[in-house]
Image 1 (cartoon, one colour):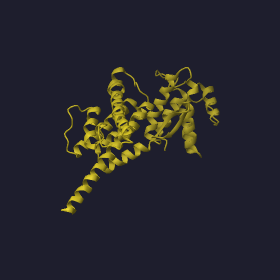
Image 2: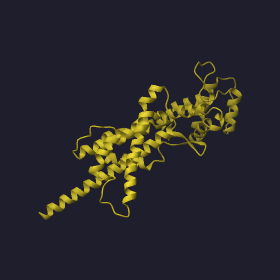
Image 3: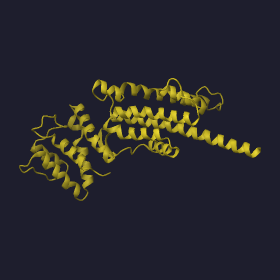
Amino acid sequence: MGISAQTLDALAEAITGGSANSSKPAIGRYRSAWHLERFMQDAGHAFTLSGGSRVPTVRLFLDELLAGHGGEAAISRLVEQVADPRDFINEPERHQAVLAYLNQYLVYDDAELVMENRRVRLRKLGAVSTVINAFATKTMALNFEAVRVEVDRALESAARDPPVAVTAACVIIESVCRSILAELRIEAPAKRDVEGLLRAVQEPLGLHPSRSDLPALLAADIRQILGGLTSVAKGIGALRTHGGSAHAAEIGQPPVDARIARFAIYSASTIALFLVETWERKQRREENQSIAEGAGG
């Protein structure tokens, strides 16, 4: 994880609260000279303004800090400190604004700020999702280009634009279903939303809850899981309708946060990975059957 100059610019704005002469609202808390020195002292750094302008002086200090021994770790701690929720106990909406502001830059450094057990942590982007990694790798191997584009879009948008990520999460499932239908040479259904597309692939893939060839001991459990597949997909579709990028633009603010966006992406990727692996299994069975029939003839 490298820290870019643009991220350092954003961090300087967040630490200082911006220029005193600016007409724009402060990013997070506005800190006077004394508060800036105290902020840096609490982080273990000796810092004085010495009559200089607040924002440029802090920005220069960040450059020097990054260039020193252990600089990236020191900057990472400052990023976490400036977004400490304890500084915004009476202004939680301002805290969310700070997280969103910093994350829109950090995403380009392959990093993100997240809440973990009431603390803010800076971590590598997507570090917790092995499902997404597996799914992305699978779509690359199968050359599902449209699907891979939506995976990339979702991951890039989760922190900086959650409504866009929610929309992309839904499109991931839709794209996988369309790709599978195309591979199976089955015409897409008249209702081409996520629910309609998922139902269209369930029958040819043997994933419909009503199938009667399930082992007696596991039948009820498998049917419940297959029914849940549709329920979760419908939920993601509804979230796209009410909290996706189109609706967010109408009401003027993001109705979902990065946490919900990531949850939608993880859920969509899990469903999509299962569909792709089921399609692969079907292909292998048909190929083996064809080989066996050819050998028998």
